Length: 195
Image (cartoon, rainbow, N blue to C red; front, side):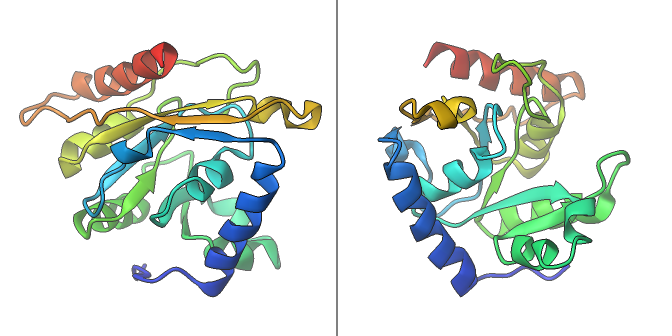
């Protein structure tokens, strides 16, 4: 996969549209000063709704890249739209070397990568179990994780106020073992629970 250094017009236009839509829910954004200005980082929010990637990316000034399951790219029209939003495909039930290499290339070039520490969406809105993915990528790429607390995206139809809070960066250890991957992801979730 070749890295897109510039976001598509559809991405930029869509982000403006979503900012307008989310403002209808009186969204509150805090802690944007914690997002690195130009360095690579893993943006690590909790995951309670399908809207979370859109919300996280729309609240930031910098473009955000993210993995999406490969099956979505095979759907006509939707697959094309997803490609325009800085998403790239990942095979979920296997170790997808191609997707991981792409993720590391993005971070090396100073881009922001969205990864959910829980790996999947919570069905009940509560924080789930920490998985190794986000911690592993941060350790191997030696980039910080930015915890992001997202509230009420699972209650959007009830028009509850949405809140997004970016926490302070968490830096991975210089020397690490495999057990540190989950520990780092868990540290992100602990901070999300406290902010």
